[in-house]
Image 1: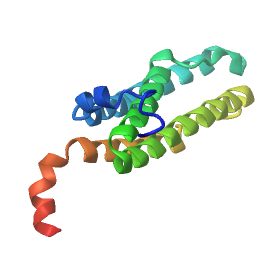
Image 2: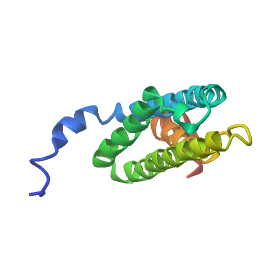
Image 3: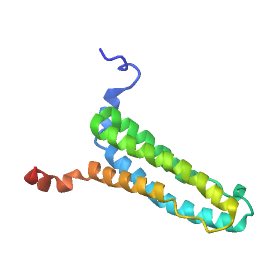
Length: 149
C-alpha cells in the first residue's frame, strides 16, 4: 500500500493523463503570449509613471505561470520522468519570472535607460515550451525516432 494513495486520486489522474501534455503545452504557449503582452504593458507603465509603483503584475500572465507549474506537478504524478523534467522547467520559468519582474521595477526606478526584455524568463520559457512540445507532439516524430533509436 502506498502512503499517499488516499490523498491523491491516482485513478482520476490516470483518466486525464493523455490530455495533460497538451494542457501543459497550452499553458506554455499562453505563457509566452502573455509574457509579450506583459512586457509591453510594463514599458507603457514605466513611461507613464515616475517610479516603480506604476508597474504591476498582469493577472493573466500570473495565471499561466501558476497553471504551468500546477499542471506539470500533476503530470509528475502520472509520468514521473517526463513530469520531473517538465516540473523543473516550469519552476525555473516561475522563479525567473519573479526575479525579472523585480529587475523591471529596479529599471523603472532608475529611469536611466529603457526597460530590458526579460531575457532569463524568455530563455526558461523557450526551454519549457520545447520540452512541452516534445512531450505532447512526440507522435509526430515517433516513426523517425524509432528508426534512429
